[in-house]
Length: 475
Image 1 (cartoon, rainbow, N blue to C red):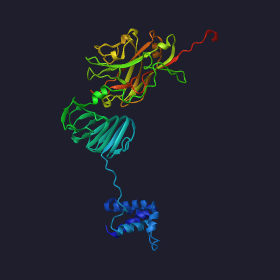
Image 2 (image 1 turned 90 degrees about the horizontal axis):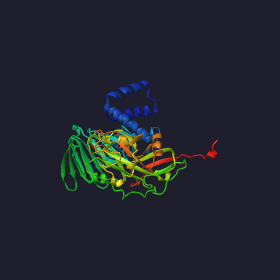
Image 3 (image 1 turned 30 degrees about the vertical axis):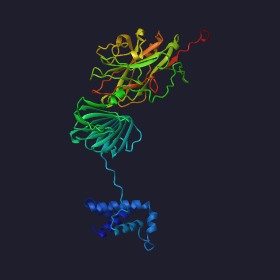
Image 4 (image 1 turned 180 degrees about the horizontal axis):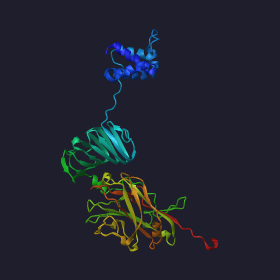
C-alpha cells in the first residue's frame, strides 16, 4: 500500500471517528475492509492512534508548527510517524500476554495474593494462583487438567509446566499432554499420561501419589529418579508430618479454661472439651492399636476402598456443673480444620452424622486409650465400620460439608440432642461423629475438626438452662 492510500484511509478513519462518513462512503469502506487485510490493519491502527492522541493532545499541540493550524492535530502526528517510516504507532505498543490455560471451574473459592484473574472462565497467562478456600480447576492448553485443593499456591508456567509452591493438586493428563511437569522446591514430577496427586509444604516435605497410569519423580537433592505406577507413592516426610501433627509449634494459647464456663449475652453457656473432664480424640481402622488423643484435630472418614481407612471422632463433655438442672436448648458446634490428608477431589459433598452414647458405663473412656480394637459403641468387625453400634447410641442430628471446604463451623441443634443431655445421670456426655458419604476413589480426603489441643476453637456445647419459677410467683 502506497502513501496516498494510507492517507486516504487515515482521512476516512478521522471522518468515521467524527461521524461524518456518508452512507455510500461507509458501504464502500466496509466492502474494502472485508477483503483487504492490509487496509484493515491501517484503518484499525489509525483509529487506535486517534484515541490515544485525544488523551495526549497537549503533547501533540506542543510539537505542531504554527503553519499547520488547519490540519487536524492527530493527523499531523500521524504524518510525522509516516514520514519517519515507523508505521502508525507513536511507540511500540505492549503485546497482549500469551495465555496458556483457562480457569474452568471455581467451586466455593476464596483467593488471596493471586497475580492472575480468578473469575471462572478466565484465560490465564504465566503467573500465580493463590487459593485459600475451595477447589479450582485449571485446564492447560496442552489438555492437562489441574485441580487445586485449598490452601494451595500454584505458579502457571506454560502449557506443559507448572510449579506447586505449597498445598495439594490433583493432575489429570491426557495423551496430548504426555510430559506435563509439576515442579516443587525439592522434586520434579513428569507425567506419562496419568492421574496423580502432589502435595508439598514450606518445609520442603512432599508426596506424590499415582492414582492412575505412570509418572516419573526426580528428587532434586539426591538426583534419584523413580517411576511410579497406580497405587504407588513417594513420600519425603509429607504423610508422616500430617498423620502425626505437632500442635506445640504454632498453637496459640487456648482461651478455653478448664475451670470456666463462659456465658454470652443471650444466656447461652459455652461448654468446651477443655473444661473439667472434657476430652476429644478419634480412632482409625487397623490391626495395630494407635492413639490420637493429643492431636490438634480429630479426623473422620468413610471409605469402601480400603478396610483400614475408616475413622470416627469421639468428643466428651463434662456436665458436672449442671447436675440437677435441665436444659431448654442445646447445640453442638464443631470447627472444621484443613486436613492435608487425602484428596478432596475424591470426596463429594459429604453428610456427617452425630450420635450420642446411651451406654453411660462407657463414658469413662480416655483420650490416649481409644483404639479401633477398644472404643465405646464400636465393634471392629461390624459391617458398617464407619458407624457406631446402634444398640448403645442414638442419632442426634446431621450436617453437611461441601466438597473442598476446609474452614468454618458446623452445628447440630435438635430436640433429640436436648433430650439426650437431659437424660444424663453421670455428668458426662459422649458424642460420636461419623461421615456417611463414601469416597469416590482410594486416597480421598479425611475430614478434620479442631480439638482442645489445637490453636483454634475446640468442640463446644452451647447450653440454655431451664429457668424454673417459684410456685409463689406463678399465676
